[in-house]
View 1 (spheres, rainbow, N blue to C red):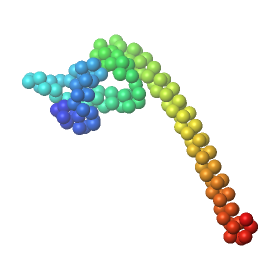
View 2: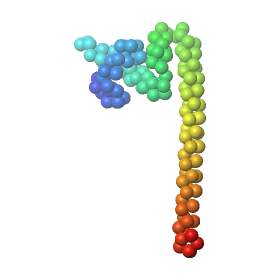
View 3: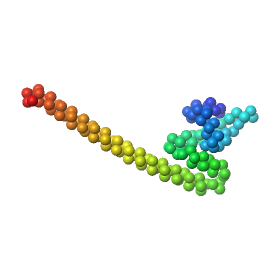
View 4: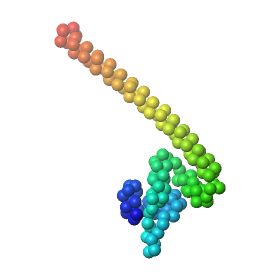
Length: 135
């Protein structure tokens, strides 16, 4: 696949794809005889993984380290696993923080809704009282 096709497929700019390769966020992309990037399925799998991990908030440095470990071969399996476990723990902590924030927002919204409901009920009683001559 050309860089333009991969760019469309993953909704990433060609510059971003080149940057990912340059900094080691994805392994080197195969090239044609004329030196043009020719993304294969393995390259696309790496891009998909990195896009997912970045969306989850995983730091670029950790991902670069993961790719470097992967390229060193099977003797790094334990180190890769440890790195992924650490990232999972960080992601879980962020999710818990986000859940607490969401809970607090929901609580505030409920308070506003209750307050608005009370005001609406008071207004309705006042209007009903006017209709019945009780004001």
